[in-house]
Length: 446
Image 1 (cartoon, rainbow, N blue to C red):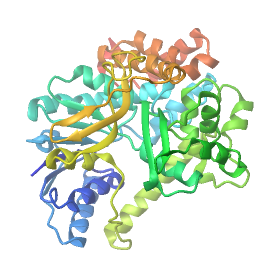
Image 2: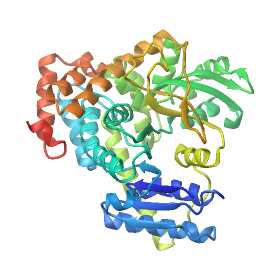
Image 3: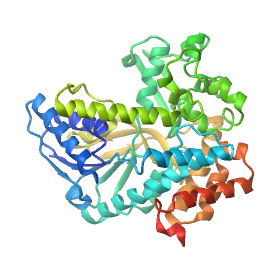
Image 4: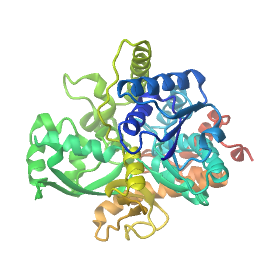
């Protein structure tokens, strides 16, 4: 029987995916599940979800619900972190201040000045979880879903002593489904090999029924209706040869080519004529992600309320999240392959040893074994290094409480460097330190 702790369980929409995946699994359904959140009201909603899922499939869930971290971690073998640090207002500030200096971000949760301060805010709490795990459940797996993924993974792995840290993201699964739509095939027919860094990994192999499907994708790109849905990603494929994993809007933040001038944003990141505004995060129109995130929060709150009140049924179809799949593979010695975020250590030889890479990993009763990618294309490594410079220096800044290294990391961010002088970056960084003084580690005030 596995012992699983979900930290941030009040994010109920995400939590229900894990709960239903656990309870519908014949060998995991009796697992002890600890639901933990600092918000009692949201935690209560997660409990209702858990009970309702159990009722629907005639299983009595073995769970506890607590606002105490140490209680949740007691004897845990697997700890899943899915919490969000701060509020939408913090996210707004992370976008508004950089925009004054010409840095036009979209989601701002992985790179750039916004991603850096999202990381500082988030790591303050992730470090609390990691340190508690070292005391309460040493040697357990920390399966982290919280962005900025690469920066967080580097910092957590450097701080960890016994805890096994892995970063999980669903961008590979979602991109497989999207590519299958573009060439009109069943996603189950797609075979792929993906590697790189989180939010900028590339499909080194994209096949349908074991036959190279890149020619079909290049043909599909010629159709205006398809190209318009993913302009940035198709342009990267056109010029660098491979299709990336992150959506066009979000992905446009990580490179210096698409967001440094208004005309480029209009050409590559604006919404197509007549396109549903709810897709604005995918395309990356300026400031659109805040509107989309706010609307998503409203929609999720309504969905939660409707399910709790019984006005909406729960979807019991399996999720595509790796979390419970990994636990199942380890507990039951069932071999699976998943793209996970791990420390490089030679896995991709032409990327720095101490960076975080997203590579295929084999999972079974022996644990998680990352695969080496010996022939990673140099042009892709060059793109990745521009992100890695930021991530490694930013993680060092977070670990050391170094304002100087945080500034230097932001100065190395590709988009920021394309539009700002060093003096402007210093002023922007100082302004953001002032705005988030109460949200980040006290070390930065020294």
